[in-house]
Length: 104
Image (cartoon, rainbow, N blue to C red; front, top):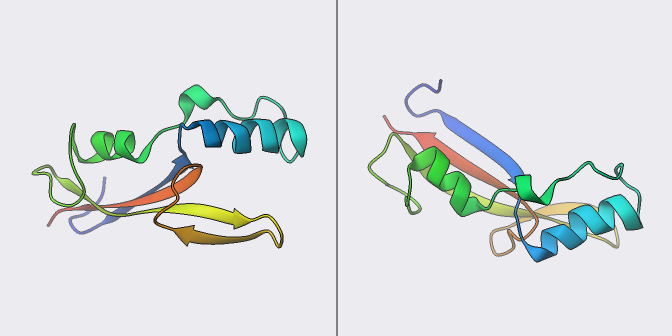
């Protein structure tokens, strides 16, 4: 449903041991920031899985020959001392956001 050149943003949680510890154990059980049962680790998606769904199976970053191409993936990380969020391309272990563009 995107026009040519349109951009799709996907934001989700990666399926890693670190995300289980942070999103489920930390946020649900330790801090109580969200209700227990909010997250299901089996429903978390990796950047590679989303890229495959959006750009086509086995697609790498950039041009895959399909109708969409990945243009960026960044982790969304929080500093626990001041609760400020930032983007970090080298840390997609927990929260991450990807941008995918429909080709012209």
